[in-house]
Amino acid sequence: LKTRLKAAAAPDRRDRVELIGVGYHWPNIGLVHDFDHLFGHNPLRLMDFERATNASDTVAGVDQRQFPPLMASYRSTLENLFGVRFIAIGAPIEQIDPSLKPGDLELIARTKDAYVYENPRALPRVMLATEWRKADFDAMTRDGNWPDVDPRRTVLLEQAPDGAPAAPAGGSARILRYHNTDISIEVDASGGGFLVLNDVWHPWWRATVDGKPTDILKANVLFRAVVVPPGKHIVRFSFHPFTGALTELTAMFSAPRR
Image 1 (spheres, helix red, strand yellow):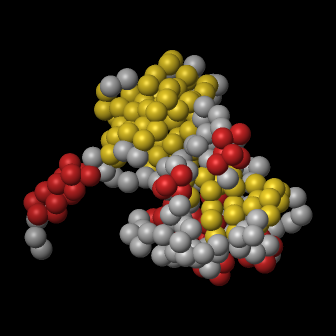
Image 2 (cartoon, helix red, strand yellow; image 1 turned 90 degrees about the vertical axis):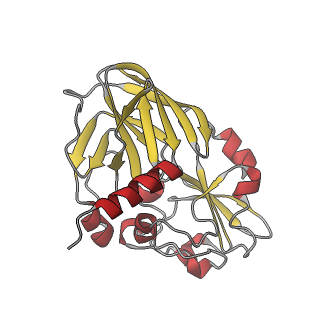
């Protein structure tokens, strides 16, 4: 997996892996070997992530990989947005996801522990979208109906953003630095647009564009987006758990009591 991830590396990519049904001790091995496992073994799930993926506490058994409406198959928009490029699973994948058709995923290796597949449709970790469309994320999670848009070009948002591009134009994004709590991305947006970071949205993250604070929009149900003006820019995401928690507690205790 590490060899394959290295070969697939690109400036805009940080591909994810799924390790499913290959033993109780495997799910968090990505923390040791520096790759991102979509599920891992972690009982502290964010509610939105759990609702969208139906993630259980662990995926030690193949039967623990669930397919809720928004992620009804390995061939789904949400799976691709997560950037799941490789899947190592303890049984032939058609037994877990019978909706797959020949050629949907490529079997690239067979080890004593797992069948290893590649998803050729996995999307980059960072993308520059130049259009947006309003969407009801709760309804999408409940019903699994994804609008017919190209996620590379159009980002789904719950509300109209400030400073959206007036007309579609091209551009690119590339990762400069990626750490657990600090991410920097270079954006080249000739007509402006939306930098989409396919990491799960959380209110304790903060963002800046060229050092100036900006809002992080909840995008594509689970992910993050930032409006960027025309030109070249550096967008930084940083995690602030203490400030975020204090802000929430202050708001909670200062709210009028009924």
